[in-house]
Length: 511
Picture (cartoon, rainbow, N blue to C red):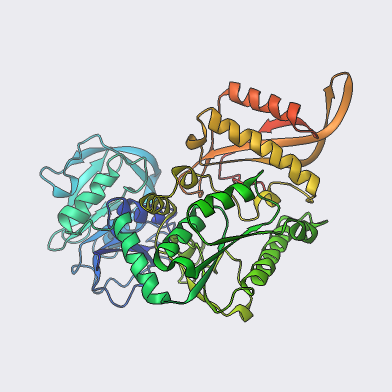
């Protein structure tokens, strides 16, 4: 089935991925392409959106898209930089704003009977993020909305189906942003809303069957959402020709290897569990630098995976749980977007001699869509609702060198914390949680004796995509109970702290 598609041209905005996700929430398929790598064949795109940008249209580094075949031909929505670009280079005027227009604002004027703002009232909150402002509209520009501080907050161009806004409808702070996108894409551009998890499953299964045929496929499972959904999709398409390998790197959560293995087998997947804990710990012995630890874990995984894959005969394909954000190139601050695609991240770059073809059933969808597809496939909601867990596992939550004893301590601490979140009904309010074992000992008193033992930090954040995150204000009573339980039950720990740093500037993980 051919879906109507929306083309999003990326000028380097931190919000570009959000635009694509909001469009897809309307059951419309969208694709992000760098502004300077526009697809040659535009026939399949029903509409185009221009993103924001950290660049200024007034600067020498202004980003110039080639809008031939787009402007005046297809319905187009220009957001922030896009709106300023159309004004500045089409007869209008953009100048520095007296005040940086950043944060919440409210629409103080909306042109009456304007289809673009159907169902949206004056006073509606929008999110601004720009230091330039449009002083004069472009040729044939018609003002359709203002805020108290920004006169030309939205305009359209007569004679074209072109709309432009100086605010960001894709962020949550723009309360009617989804309605605005729907007004433009569905009511004005006439895009069909036929991109659903059910249609994705049906079409992906068909595509896998066509691509792979009767060949064998090998997949490295991690226990996470992406690889699990990829496995169930592949299993639905090719059944027993899918060979899954689940490696225990010794850095998983407490009892996770066996419990996840049992879950997979209960789902009818063809899975082999490989316990390589000792091999990983030996590779990590004495390493303290986070990058060296990551490399050692990645290299050992490849070796273990390769050993197991070679025990299979006639395998032609390697499956990966790559998702759309892995495919979209991250934007550099100076050079703007480019067409480079990230290397396959899940397996860490396999050795050339494996020479397997790649199949990535999830490469077109975002994390929240992966969960919706998983629900359509009937995967256990508990598994789909699992917090993200880093590939190197506890290896980057043990600061400094890694030993079997440190892993044991952190597994016990982590189990108390995570189980506590579930018991208190807090787990689903948290995007990611975990414990860090710090490379410091502190003095304590237990009974009548002084102790000199480890300190652990607990971390819980709320986020939508991991790009930004806020620490979660967990109840004091919960933290008090959890701290007491950790110190009383985990030998080797005498102090617990709670991390209240947001991202940015801090990252979610400590290494």
